[in-house]
Length: 422
Ligand SMILES: Cc1ncc(COP(=O)(O)O)c(C=O)c1O
Image (cartoon, rainbow, N blue to C red; front, side):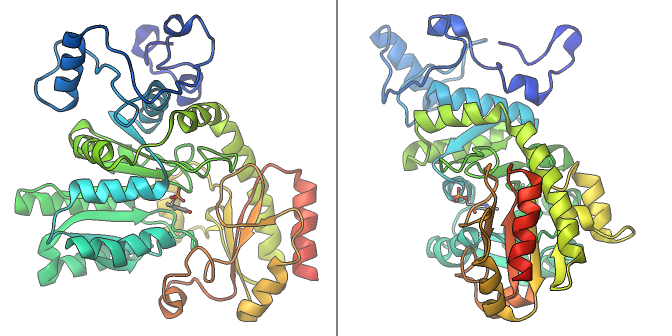
């Protein structure tokens, strides 16, 4: 399937594109599926052809009409990555995609590519622990500081307050993880776009909106049509989906992706051809997996909400009607996903006792795979964030996060009740 449009210019759906778009079988001996292009480098037809490929890759000349970037070297480009990137860009309604060695490689390369010493990030919190570490500990070494505001319905008002402070003038990028890991709180992407546009008109300088879409995207949430410039994923999670690879992805407009791709080429933060091939395989079942996992999670979230030991359940599918969180969810998401967090009385010791009783749910950090996982955010994925800061964000010592997989629902229900009732 070469084209994104069928007859009549109606776009194919992403599920259809995931099965064929961007791959031409006749270029690979008619192989129905893309082979793994396990090669570090590509042979040029002539010295002149090689020179022209490099000119284009390094921006030394403009592309001729209809000219595509030729294959050079797998740090710059590789068919397995390119096919995956084209399919993901189509899914996200973006111009370009770039695959990375991990979600953290994706986020780091975006920040290094777009920000300069003196620039600031305004981010919601909580964010994944690795992102928090990058913002708090690594980027300041390069002169980039981050201000955090609490994620959720008030996040945009809190951001406005920060922007009115003297340091607010330096904000160049608004970052959010929505829903947030692990509180599952939603932040309004369209409202972030509105602030970014106001700032841009006051300053005559673009302010980038970057959204970590790992938890719900691309099946249940598409941030680009809501106003996000860059959509970032840990592809290790749902997109990879089988807990057998680590990868990341960014999609966005050509203009912003150009510096990101330039930095990826020089930092070497791309992923391998084999990972690209695995991601292509995974993309074919992404929609089916995410929908089925969400179906299982919905039932388990309700079970948790009714259990006497559970103080609070965080799950987008359980948001109260009439609340701002519910309104944001309905405006920007088409499904609740399969991450649930819940709080028990008794702090860490009760949480640990419960976690250790699971048998079907495996005790491991990560999420979005076919198997169900359970973890303790405060001492594991978010261990680098001071406990008091986490408590203030609702990430308490009694909070447990589960990622619901594809096991038989009755086994998952029994396992959850066994862990809670023990
Ligand atoms: C929301 C979110 N973003 C980014 C990351 C980082 O991804 P990776 O582990 O692929 O580097 C994670 C990892 O758990 C995550 O949960």
